[in-house]
Amino acid sequence: MSPKEDKKILDKLKQKTWNEIKTNDSWAIFKIMAEFVNGYEQLSRIGPCVSIFGSARTKPEDFNYILAEEIAFKLTQNGFGVVTGGGPGIMEAGNKGAHRGKGVSVGLNIELPFEQHFNPYIDKDKNLEFDYFFVRKVMFVKYSQGFVVMPGGFGTLDELFEAITLIQTHKIGKFPIVLVGTEFWGGLLDWIKSTLIKKHKTVSPENLDLFKIVDTADETVTIFKEFYSVYSLKPNF
Image (cartoon, rainbow, N blue to C red; front, side, top):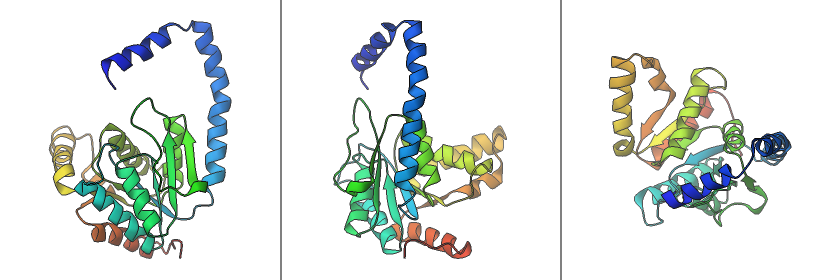
């Protein structure tokens, strides 16, 4: 977002009185409830799916776009549906691969003042719109059997670390978290090891087992197949 757009949003907020803010907050509760109810009703029928995250800015000719599409396609060939944030870039690639594989293709779109618009590869009855990031994040975790995390920005990192935290604290059951791209994720892994684990001891070494880093579509799909085999879970076949 540009400084000009930032100023416009801040100016709009300054125009509201405290009473207006309090009133809006109270009525927002009903809108939040409606988003949860609609999300639960729509997504409870999608079957086992894998969420794919990554940058909205990735172009169709980019290596990571092509790889994300291939991962999504191969997931559908193994019985999994695909869930994305519904927008362009890596999200579009994930839905495109699922569509090509004739699998379930879900989009959880978020209303933003820039960048975001839903892509054309989402199943028509599985294109959901959200106003609230936190409601949308609940849907990703509740209705996914695992996360595939492609190169991305702050939003991608947000989804990644939230899932790791929820598994680490036993708030949800363990599921596969696969980071795709050794070159992209290697620096982050080195920092976690050297700074968080070794120097400051704010993370336990065993927490590294909560995710894996791979480079290919086949490696990614194998992780999900092995996980389902161990836990005797069955995808959409």
